[in-house]
Length: 144
Image 1 (cartoon, rainbow, N blue to C red):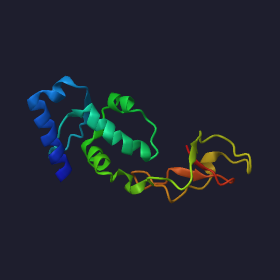
Image 2 (image 1 turned 30 degrees about the vertical axis):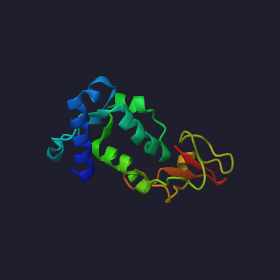
Image 3 (image 1 turned 135 degrees about the horizontal axis):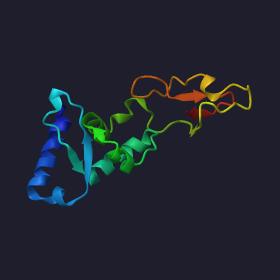
Image 4 (image 1 turned 135 degrees about the vertical axis):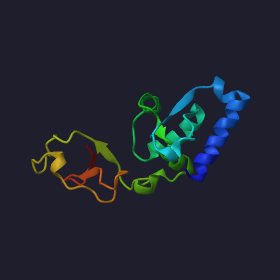
């Protein structure tokens, strides 16, 4: 467990002892099930999740914080990286050019190929080190 996880755990435990976090809205921490996470917090105050969410959206993600909570929340590792501002390690914080979202089956007006058949942009990598944007013939970046 990282130093930030330990600090976050101390903060959450401290807040719950004085009752402040118990009365506020909670954000779940995704349970991974690995032994080293046994002492990780199971939730954090919603206001802390909102701070992490700001960094999350700067990385090009558009899922709402409420939807993330419904799906189980962020993992403790994600929270660590988001709060430290290190989550964008593989995502540009301020992309030099905007991108649009589209379905992979959309036909390109220039070449007639589907968007998914266009080359990936190696400058934008997802968490698994795979490119997540395509460069169209017109030069526009597309997230499928």
